[in-house]
Image (cartoon, rainbow over all chains, first blue to last red; front, top):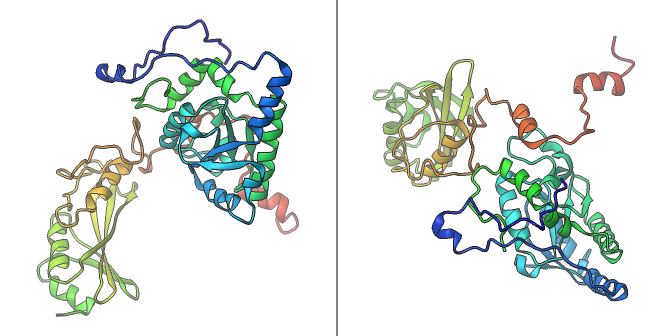
Length: 210
Length: 181
């Protein structure tokens, strides 16, 4: 990791055909710049932490735990945490357990379409080290090689109480300004892209999905 | 119409080389048929004997015998009886006649078998389109010579610090220290 990409030119978009290249932007994303006045930035972070919109995209078996999280018994709405149907409206991506290579491609596209600053919670043991699928031919073992993860909630599966605790922990991190996955992704974009392209063999999408 | 499965098989035995007939359990009969007769036999079961439902189509890899065994599971809604038809095909030249004209949904099963086992079904629609694996560039993963651990370690980079125990040794040492000699 560790090359700063700010000085580099536009994305190559080599996965697209010549006709498709005109349809997609090749601009590089820019990192989020905090507001220069610290008090204002802290206020913005406080607001941000209290209106978290989760992308309702169940990527694995863990997504089954999200339904009770949202309904009356656990009721995550109490904490300003609610699902949204499209990536454009969402700010939190909950990775629901294992990610196969095929799903990872969709995760990347959805994640990049979300508006920044955005946060990723990975639930379950599978995104950490593969879990029970550590020797599978189709499940990624270290999820943070491909997408920056702000918070891991381990367990197989984590119960909704733990997810609630994780949401509160994420809110704490956001308020303290430590949830910087969005900027990590953009500043090390070439490193992430190289990792992604190493396992996604049929890369037929733009390098950054605006 | 004749509804007793045993007598159906007996009557069909005159025309087809049916072997290894056994009743797996009540309501499920398994049998084996040569590759050349298989599609005609399935057509006879569907049109003549009312086994109209293709429940699934799958394959078993017998690497030590050098063959795949395809399993066509047919179901009769009137009698609630199933017949599983096994067909042996050669492992090196893994190819079988397509049945997508008998059951349209078989095309999906055949796509999956092409992808997971590398079995060819000439003429089957969209046979070479990606099904579960996108951009797969290795030998098909459900073949037994495919080493999934090596593939995973090569491709997905195991995280440092993970330890595994041999279950047998672990049980001896941790769970039953007294009873082992």
